[in-house]
Image (cartoon, rainbow, N blue to C red):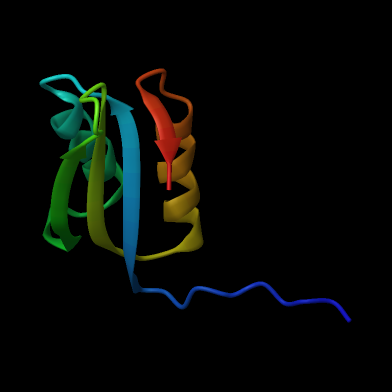
Length: 88
């Protein structure tokens, strides 16, 4: 029996975590990219957390996602940037 993949119902709240090197501007860098794809009013929560050694910084953003195409474009831009190490 084939398992079905969960399907997102848009619009929906969407949590995104982006991890990169802990530099002074990494949080703003991530927010700037997200805002190119998501209307500013839809960005709900921004939290940052340095790694235990301080080398990395995770930026967590919760926003309202409007479509699969929007999500694909956002992930595409983030994943192709050299400053981004992981996207969760």
